[in-house]
Length: 218
Image (cartoon, rainbow, N blue to C red; front, side, top):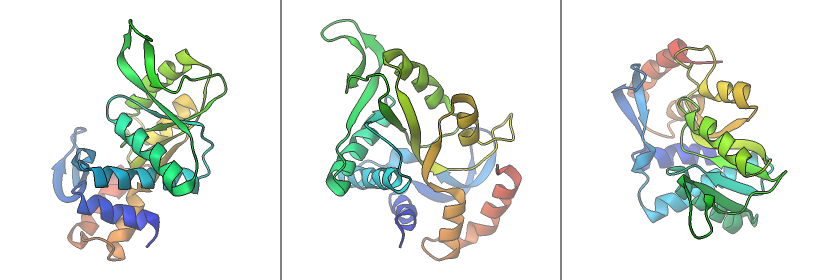
């Protein structure tokens, strides 16, 4: 299997990707659901980091520092930076932000690598629904230094139109911030994995294709 196929199976086995009838926050009725909160063991987190690292290497994303937005992005960035070193021999730095700036000790908004002008930074997050995390991260990063955000890596691109746009959240992110968002897999990869028997879900295949047809962004 490819690493993408392995990742889809990993999501199913971890209870992160499930099939059924779900009402999303947007109000849309979807035949599948992704809950990244179900990654909860050390083994799962270590494996997840390897898939992030694989995506970075596969897409040749220039990187010197991984940034994990608080709070969900912190363990993801840590797992990815360890995997880049252990699996690929690529030793880069990482940092994350505080929800509130620290006014004692070393102070500041960031923990980890002190950012510098021109530094190539990749943002690590779980999924992108509205682009809110990117919108909050960009001014924080730029306030620390004139960094070069070379990309953002997420687990799954649902490839759905936003509620008020024909663009997907990924497309809007690029339009609004000039940041390319890379995903380990997208919904088309998941549909193909079902068709190829990589994972169960054949009973929901027609519903997934219909949902993609109705809400999908190009």
